[in-house]
Amino acid sequence: MKIAPARADRFCAAPDSDVRLVLIYGSNEGLVRARAEACVKAVAEDADDPFRVTSIDPTLLRDEPGRLADEAAALSLIGGRRAVRLRGATEAVVPAVRSCLALPATESLVVAEAGPLTPRSGLRRLCEQEAGLAAIACYDESAEDAARLIEDLCTKRAITVASETAAWLAERLGSDRRQIESGVEKLAVYLGEGGPEGGLLTQEIAEACVGDATEASADAVARLALSGDREGLDRAMSRALYGGVQPITILRAAARRLARLHLAVAALEGGASRADAMGSLKPPVFPRERASFGQEMMRWPSARAARALTLLTRAERDCKVSGGAPEAICWQALLRIARAARRQNA
Image 1 (cartoon, rainbow, N blue to C red):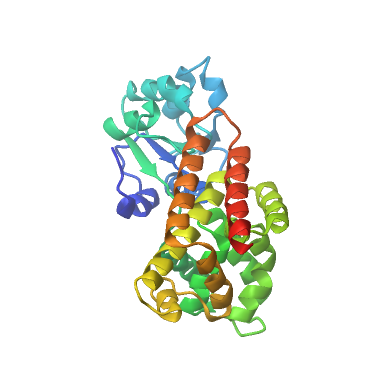
Image 2: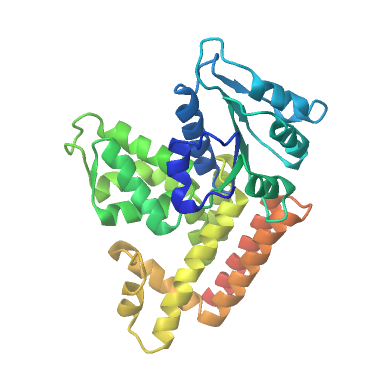
């Protein structure tokens, strides 16, 4: 059974009783983890309860595929429904998942977490097509979704944030939910109970708290590449990768920024003023960034931006399907873009 994106969070909060295994997969690692934990808590109440929650290493299932079914069929010693977590699932666990289908109805729910899976993935197809199994895709948050998530997380922590500040944070923190949650948690710690602004998150506080994350974020790497700052790109790229930012996340951040430039430049080439071209974007270019964004518009006319977008798309594809190192593929693509920007500067 394929769970639609609009229904995914509701499903995870209350999984269908006839579903015995749910596969949660995608490039957004933070969202995969959050939804998996939501499923576990919905079933076992406490994700750390050793009597009702157990974890299995996928590598153990290669030689013992029936072990997953054994765990799924086991009863809790203290009563209640059990959860079985399977982190890092790959195509190798397909026989183990099929063994679960042979079981009669059980009280346990197996929660499998995986990275990006193509439509041709046997594991994904199995969970999408078989009754009693479910599959949920977790893609990177859009800018609008990320801003709404930041507003929701702030509301839960009694933090007041303006929509413009939330949009600014969404651009800085990137599209991975784990990174967004970490950034908001950092802001919450800074503000504290009745913090310096009475729980009000101002733009100045956001900039002060997220400065370090900005330098290590995918968006910061993208800006430096598009500006042609080779030295800054090397430093930011190293920090981002060391901080756990995935190469595909970085490539997508660069593609998003190039796409915004492409739209603005197209409006400019169509006769709009530079201010109107920037203002037509959603979210709009913030006042303090208009000067640097205007310079990038000069470096990236629409034809050049289109070629760079093609380069980034190919690099993302190569990261997924080639045998090369994703970090090297990403780095090489961004270096080519930085060199193109430097030539335009010259």
